[in-house]
Length: 86
Image (cartoon, rainbow, N blue to C red):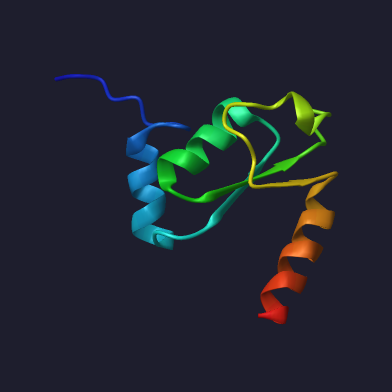
């Protein structure tokens, strides 16, 4: 038997999420190295919130976030406003 890494950002976790939520979505997180890479593994957008490890989005290069917000509440408000406008 071979061990499989199943957490973020690995494919085993991504396959589980995709099977439950579909192939389109947004991962919101404060860690580009796990949350951002997980978004890319999923094929989802990555929204970076500046409430944790990263406090300056200009320093993030890999992966570059698709959206940046100062906190989760701001991101959710903006996201919902954009969805209702379309």
